[in-house]
Length: 219
Image 1 (spheres, helix red, strand yellow):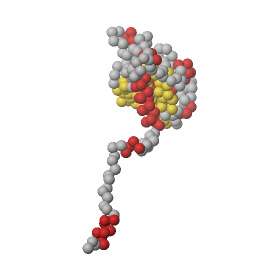
Image 2 (tube, one colour):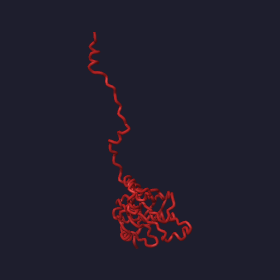
Image 3 (cartoon, helix red, strand yellow):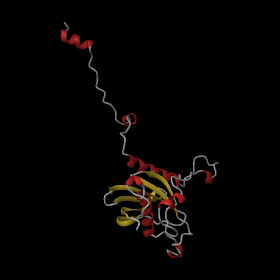
Image 4 (cartoon, one colour):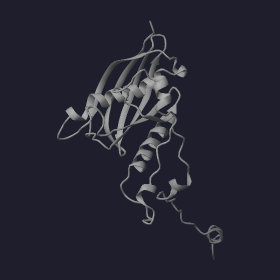
């Protein structure tokens, strides 16, 4: 005789537990939003890499001169001249390609053999001096410092200090130097700002450091 307990078990057979797989689970769940600064930094690195890539597109029928897009112009050279007090031969910013008020600014300098420092640095191997890369990055930071959204104005600014500067690769004639300056801390009361900067060529970091900027007043 079959017991009552056994008959109940026969009606409800035991099911095996199926453990969920994790290999593809992440594809169905959107990642949580990151802060704008991180997103902007990754966007710049991707854009710089794409703009300077040497690998041609899959369609080889497209001439190479038509495969790459130009950098956008948020501020052109004339607008930059209205903001920065620098002039030849020390204006080292050609175009602003991205500006997030009070957060970051990205600009470029086209390095050419006609730059006045190449005849002496060096005649047989033209390399952009590291101190001028730092100066160019400071000018990019100055574009942000002189904007009203960070308490600036059309006054002068001063490069007050630099720290943890590293030069990763040489920059030569023909390169496009892409410079990002991120605002880390701003003391409006004292007119002082701390920034972090990185410069790229072809998506690779060539220079980086921390910058201290100070606003001055016209006399």
